[in-house]
Image 1 (tube, rainbow, N blue to C red):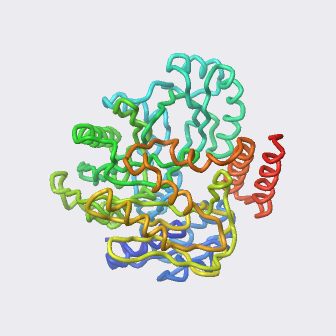
Image 2 (spheres, helix red, strand yellow; image 1 turned 60 degrees about the horizontal axis):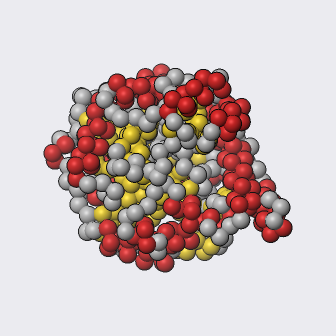
Image 3 (cartoon, rainbow, N blue to C red; image 1 turned 45 degrees about the vertical axis):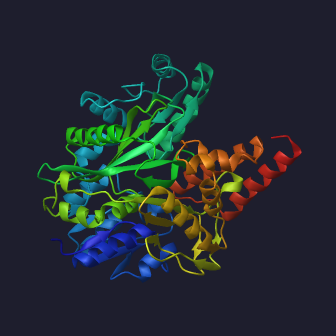
Length: 495
């Protein structure tokens, strides 16, 4: 087993990995930026090292600084968590070249699957159904248009190196696609370092369902069931549940077996997630593979009783999986909501402020993963996720009732959050009946807002996200100014 693990992340996932290390008896090194000096993941650490200034490019994305900290502390392994460098093959390769173990897939597999088009071709060759669209990337509008016509309108224009729901534009026809290509190329280069694009037919209405995969270095791969991730805003997940209410037993079996087949075709090792879209006829289509632990791994742990992070560490140390597929047992129903510093009433515009009051729920069958404290400043440097609230119950109806109670108990004052959106969603008859898709949650939030305000808020959110990725966060006033001008414009009817 490892001597010491560097946790190359921050916030709640840093605390989650730290807890797993402690349970395994492995010392861990937490890292932090200057902005996170007093953050809970630092105050709770066994050992901590500052790796740079607040902008991510100077700290959590700074590979030399991370490796210097790891070597100075005597670490022999690195856990990347999710986000930041977790799916960066250059980081995984640098870790290996430094003589440390990367707790995740190999750099070669990361490159193979990080190329969205390469992953589509690989899965198609392995016999998995994929949505109609490009099989080669391009920056040529004519080539992309030809692919779109062959796939059928409408289509999504996607960044080949994109991820996390980012780098996606919808084109309803030829004019819309041609207009979107130059901007999409520029955005993809800025956000992902490559302007390559591809098109994929839009499946709508669609359910987003993913399968948790775990593989060891001895050729064993198992699935740990599926998660329903259709409650989204701007193609990014906010609420997840398992099992999915959209699947019957036959479809669930076929979906999970396809996910294992795809992972084996990729030669996958460690924790990963195969993502699919489910169409209105109940047919599933491969979307992409996430090569890391997922934000929503907690609900899989609740229904299986397995600790995915500890299993990640054991597998990376060379151990075999301690169970076979037939040993995995699924019990009950689990739901997770992502409490983010965003304002649903303003098109999910990022919010910031100081936590003046904080009460997170606890109790039987309730799990809260967070790294928060009263008086903590919530800024715009990093991802907006504040906490994950999870519940388990014997069935879905009881789980939703428990989540409603948890939401009523939760208080985070001083910053706007997604809590009101979840309360509205849980009261939605279609959601309670299990009838919802990827447009449901955003539709609830936008029902009362004028279109002009929604457009301006979406632009503001995109600018703030781009600034974060470039390591130059906009001041808090920028977000407020966009929201204020959007509201005024919508009231005047000029937007």
